[in-house]
Image 1: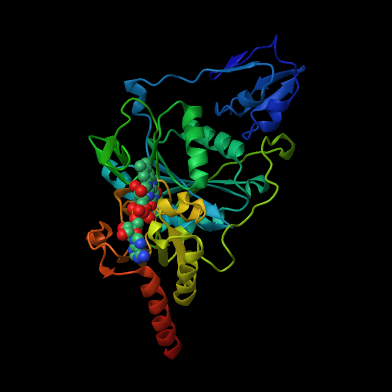
Image 2 (image 1 turned 60 degrees about the horizontal axis):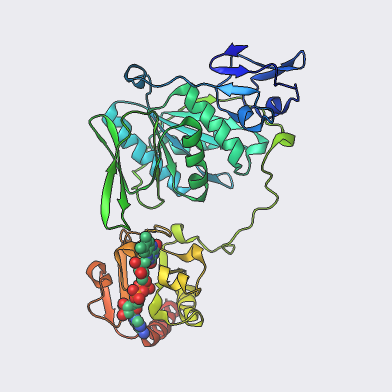
Length: 400
Ligand SMILES: Cc1cc2nc3c(=O)[nH]c(=O)nc-3n(C[C@H](O)[C@H](O)[C@H](O)COP(=O)(O)OP(=O)(O)OC[C@H]3O[C@@H](n4cnc5c(N)ncnc54)[C@H](O)[C@@H]3O)c2cc1C
C-alpha cells in the first residue's frame, strides 16, 4: 500500500509496532498485523529509522524550479533552557525578521518543550509572526531523535523557504541531522546572512579563517544555516507585537525513545554566567606560562565578577578545558569587557571576540596583532600587571 510517498512492504512487515511507537504525529496504525500509514503522515522518517526489517520505503517528491516557489517564510529553531529563551534565540529572531522583510515573507518560530506557549509573547517581540508550538512532557530535555523527527515533519508539512538554527551544542547536533533527513545542504557557523537575488547569502570563514566564503543553495529548499551565538545583533523588542500560535499535537511513547537522558550535568557553577553570556571575560593565552598561573586570572575574575576564557594555545597545552576556548573553533563571545592576557591575537582568536564592546590587551610584545583591535593596550608582563590591577580594583571597589 502506498500513500503520500511512503510505502509499507507487506512481505517484510512483521507488525512489531515499533513504527507506531516512534511516530510523533500518530500517523501509523497496526491493522491485521501490518503497519498502515494514515493521511496525516509528514514523511518525517522516524519510522524508517527504527524499522528492523526494511519494511518501510520513503520517496519524497523531488524539487523542481516550479515547486521551489511553494517554499515561503523564514523559520528559526528556538532554543530554550530551563523554560526560558536562550539569548541566541532572540538573535536569530532579529536576523530572521530582517531577512523576511527583504523577501516580503513571514517569520516562523518552532518551539519544542514540555511547556512552551508562555514564550510566544517574548519571541514575538523580536519579530516572529507565527509560533509553531510542540508541547510534550517527553520534550523537557533535548533528545536528538525526537527533535529531528518532529522538526523534519514540520518542515515537510509547512515548507519554509529558510530555516535558521543556533550554532550551539544543541543546534550543531540537530541541524545537520534535519538537513540530512531532508537531503538538503547546511551552512554551519555563519557570521553573516543576507538576501541576494532572492537567495540566502550565507557568509562564513573558510580556509582557517583567512577568507570569507559566500554560500548559496539555489536548487534546494529550505535553505538552512546555523549562526553562532553573539554574532547577530538583537533588535529592539516591540512588546505590542503578537504571534499567531499554531499548536502541533504529537504523541511520544517514552518506551520507544532511542536516546534516554539520564542526567543533565551543569559545567558552570550556580550563579556563574557561561562564557557566551558573560559581561566580563578575562582570557589567558600561551603567555600565561602554566595552568597554575591562571589562578591570577581567576582572582581577578572574582573581583570584577567576570568569567575566565582562554586561547586555543592555552587549551591545547591542557591548561584550561575546551569549553573555555574563545575563537573560530571555540566560542564566539561579545562581552562588555574582554581582557586578553598573553594572547597574540591571531585571526582565529579575533573572530571569536572582536565584537566585544571594549577590548583590553596585556602583552609584552608591542607588535602583537591583538593591539590592532584593542581599545586599551598595556605593554608589559602580565605576572606583574594582573595582580597589581586586581589589588587596585579591590581597593576601589571596596571604597564604593
Ligand atoms: C583552523 C584553526 C582554528 C583555530 N581556532 C582557534 C580558536 O578558536 N581560538 C584560538 O585562540 N586560536 C585558534 N587557532 C590558533 C591560532 O592560530 C593561534 O595559534 C592561537 O590563537 C595562539 O594562541 P596565543 O595567542 O595564546 O599564543 P601565541 O600566539 O603564542 O601568543 C602568546 C602571546 O603571549 C605574549 N606573552 C608571553 N609572555 C608574556 C607575559 N609574561 N606577559 C604578557 N604577554 C606575554 C607573547 O608576546 C605572545 O604575543 C586556530 C588555528 C587554526 C588553524
